[in-house]
Image (tube, rainbow, N blue to C red):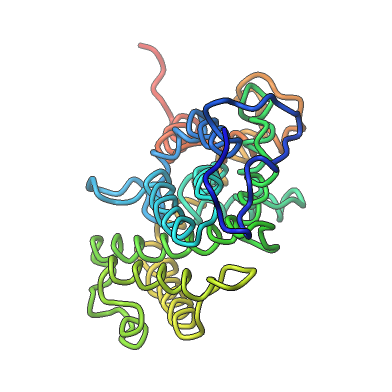
Length: 322
């Protein structure tokens, strides 16, 4: 299937490459096929039970990794469409960017990374694990054979290094736009902060509501990147956004009750890792990797509620049969 006309800077599906060559699909581009493979993956379905900031929050309106993924996709596709870039590539990257996230959000990721570094000399980063999910763990150990462009965008949506495509750069920026704004919404709903607590100077630049802020940020990206070979923000908007993000870390992510949630996540995640390393019989059968890698794959793939359940089964005493 041929793509519609795109900006000369856009990545093109007809130029995409895979580790294992495949016959073209008559109905879908290579990036559309990648998107569909990700959406049908088991790891994608598990995102609906992985929360963002709060562990098993009460109420039906808090974000999960799945709703976050969909919000990143919506914002990213808007930017790509406005710039004439490859919307399908942006969509595929956004759908896969958090597949490797540990349970309990960034608190779970940090707990897993700290334990692996201190006790096994290894590291855990969810972007690298997301690539491992699509390259190795899905498809019964065969991976999904995604295009290089999609895997590059997933790997570099956070951390060091920059995506090689403008579409990947869009995802890297709008991921932050999405989570900062929806975490503000969730933090207000949880009464951790009030709308009046938000920093006045930054709000004056970005807008007082979620809709106003996202519109301002998206419009600024499109305008600032129009004639550039990179995705960027204006100095004024970029500085205001970085300052607002810093505020969120100080007042929400590292403050109570989120800090209490982080302690709980650390207790559960690290307990699970140590228990499964000490007793390999707890692991599901299969896999040729070393034990620490198998445990990392298993625990990082858990949903919040499954992690809590397994932890309870291992550590909470049970009465024996009558």
